[in-house]
Amino acid sequence: MKSDILQLMVDRELDAIVVYGGTDTSSDLAYLTGGAHLGDGMYLHTQTDGPVLFSNALERENARSTGYPVRLWSDFPMGRYLKTNHNDLMAARLAQWRDIFAEYGVQGRVGFYGMSDMGYAWRFLSALEEAMPEIQVVGETPPNLFAQARQTKDAREIDMMRAAGKATTAIIANVFDFLSGHRAQDDTLIKKDGAPLTIGDVKAFIRLELARRNLEDVHEHIFSQGRDAGVPHNVGRYDMPVRLGQTIIFDIFPRDRTTGYFHDITRTFFLGYAPDALAAKWLDVKRVFDEVMASICVGEPGSKYQTMTCDLFEVMNYPTICSDPKTTIGYIHSLGHGVGLDIHEYPRLSAYGPAAPLQAGHVLTVEPGLYFPDEGWGVRIEDTIAFDATGAIVNLSDFPYEMVIPVKSA
Image (cartoon, rainbow, N blue to C red):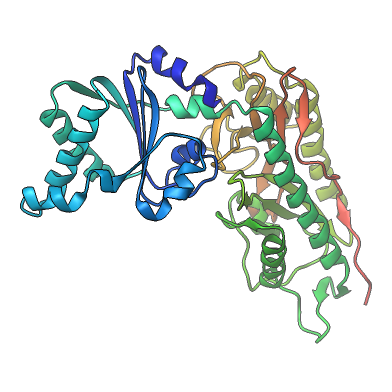
């Protein structure tokens, strides 16, 4: 949480931190500004004096809405630094930052965060450290200070994420109604003009539903059918007719345009009917999902539930990534990931990465799945859950698990 930032600085022996960039490209800066948009901002926080936020004059009111002390870049005008540095932009930026750091007494170990071209960032920070021997540039390996702060959400953040979940599930309900409203002819859904309803048509409807609820499809949602559902991140082919009796994976993970928080939910379903063999596969995934949801709790490492999922699927004789990391069929991914201002955050329900225990404030997905593209099917069921301040589970994806969606007969 934001209240942890100072302690996280102390833990890392950081005398100051700098987050530079824009809120559209740096989710760390967006986290700090609480939704206020900045195209060119810098958050500077020293252990001794606390935070200050730099903004251009055009966005000064956005910056002031954050409650931080605000300085304008025009207090350190780039034109003056360019003039005295022969229009060398890097030299001018170095001189500007040197003056800012001097005014705010920045010295010692300084952590740098934000988004920038990797090559430029390396050149600039190397030159900054050379120009300012009183500072030591510190870079972190994941999970860095902000990944650790952001992975625990406070009650306000969870409420915002609950609202995003409610809006997202309303879209799923309307999509199901949209599909049910079409008649079937020869195992294909048909539009009023007699042409087949395509996945592209469904996606167009989904985009309208997102816009109506002030949600945005930052990463394209998945609506994949049959063989394509057997490849987890296949978004679906726009020209494919929507057919009955095939597995359809609908994985939607929009961002709330007002708060910036994501939601993530997946439902796999059949239109009209479910063939017995595929219905059994759906039930196998749902059984694993239910067992994990009944077991997951704070105090346990996320890797425990990845192992549990693999064990459950292997008992059913499905291949898994735990036994064969190279497998491309069966259960082939981790069980879940954190969700917040990025669609993938910490913590992770994975065999890889830090083995820290789950704790109150974590928000994450639970998403077991099975994938067999050559057999023409894939099944995934996913909810986003939170652990509240007491450690109790709150399901942010409050939506039924329907195997079959009815459609009109011809």
